[in-house]
Each structure stands twice: as structure tokens, then as C-alpha cells.
Image 1 (spheres, rainbow, N blue to C red):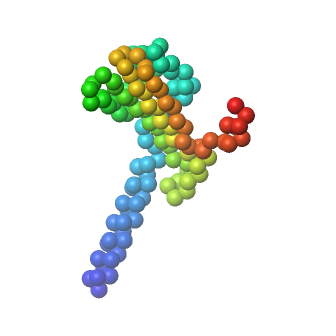
Image 2 (tube, helix red, strand yellow):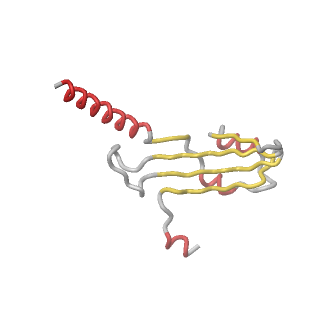
Image 3 (cartoon, one colour):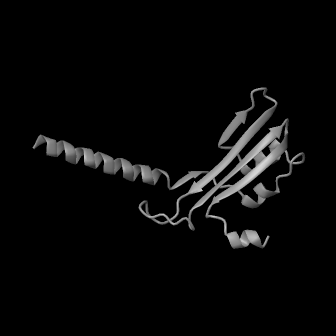
Length: 125
């Protein structure tokens, strides 16, 4: 009898943890302006401009010799209306990684992972 009670309690804990974990991943990060992210120009755009437009980055890294900084902006929003459904066409996941040399941009990479890119749209660019 006590084994059955422990099994029910353990099952309830697992169910609760799964439910809460799924709710926690509905949205992560702060959304940012895609159009601006794609217009960042190496050697022209500055840290101050980016910070003014996009706010504080989610992650800031410095290279070993401290001559470059890397800022990462990331945003994720789950697809579907409930935790047990997932529609990749409604989900959003994007990332912007900017490498600075001094106060200006050395390289900027914008990636939109979700929704999946339309292969036909890519073919006609």
C-alpha cells in the first residue's frame, strides 16, 4: 500500500515538474527589431547605436585578449496555444550575434531559426 502511495506521489511530482517546465519555455528573452538587426553595418554601426535600439544584450562575452566583445541577443516564443501543442509555423526563434572591435561592429550575424525558412522564398531572392 505504501509503495502505491509513493508511486502516485512520484507520478504527481513528475507531472507537475513537466507542466511547470513547459510553461517556463513559452517565451524567453526580449524580442528585438529584425529589420534593424539586418541593417547593422560592420565598421559603421557603434555599440551605443545598438544599445540604444536593442537595449541590453542577453549575453556579453570578451575575447581572451580583451580586444573584442561579443554581444548576443536571443528571442524564443513557443508555437501553439498550450504547452502540449507545438506548431513550428507559429513559433519564433531568432538570434543576433555581434562582434565588436573597439566601439564599432566588426561582424553581425542575424539568424531566424523558427519559423523554418521557406525554401521557395530563398530561391527567389
